[in-house]
Image (cartoon, rainbow, N blue to C red; front, top):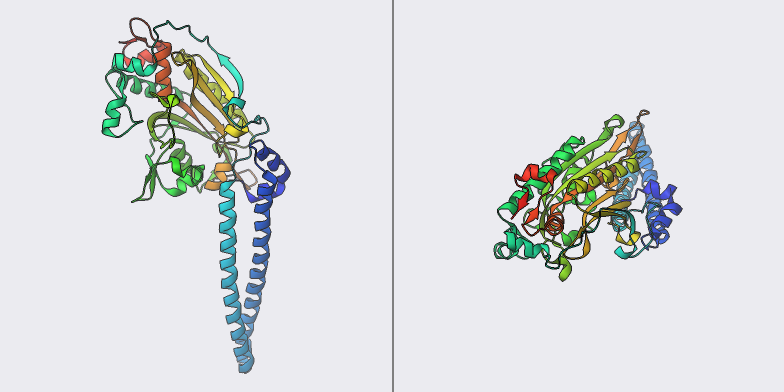
Length: 423
């Protein structure tokens, strides 16, 4: 959530940055500031009434002592009127603050100035491509056919147990899943990330804190009896560990990682682009999260991008890195890099990781701050990234490494699977 002080001090800059998303930022920010002026005016009236009530209250006792009963009773009646005014002002302030907060909840983060303008994924900027796209044999199969051939996962059984989008991994497919998770966690902890095992359900405050609520409520599974939400990513519970906290400046960088299943309703997802493992309602992912000093968060972002690259190199997959345009940014992100791997049999790129800097957007919602050397408090910057999401990694491994004998397992991963050929 954009901060009121930030909007007051940087309105023109923020309006320009929101324009990268195709929004009329000036109009939205003016609405926020108009409500703030209204709130300040009511607050001044409330303060004046409170001061008047304090003065009169001090006079009442003296008037009674002096025997001025009639004047004292009149003063008491006046304080009664002022108390009613104070209640009215409090109700007005609460209503204005609620309206302002609800408006702020609808305004996305202001993109970083390096974010390209654009309306869709076609406008994303390719900043790097690595690896040769493999030439596949004429009889090369897509991953869902390979899964049947080698008993890797079963989509039909998932439909039987739950519904579409819930695959059942079997035999070496299940071992491949575990191997990838362990590979990603071991690499993350080697890079100084503390491993966290968070709950798989969150409360509403956690969803609001990281920006999933109210923006993406329709995409989350809601446990209505307890008012909990199944997590869409480990980012949400891990980032909320520091909600309502004041950190010491020398605590940075704070680095955490976590493996969790992820749950997304993905309403309205149909067609060839969601076939096989391309888009699921439940999938596994290892997430990396950092809390950074505002002066260093973009350096941290680049370090996180470099780290994810090392994973894809170890998996021997061709990939490219995109800087997302304004129209393709998530609601809370200021700058996002997407990693895509080449799906050989499908002949297209598949997103496997998003790495984002949210600047102070999440921290303002969560009230997460740090104290500097002068004892002044500032909002932290939060960042997170997929490192990595498994379904499309599995799809790309199956398709890119298929041979006539089976699926070749990269050396770095074979240490965890216990086999170098899936057949």
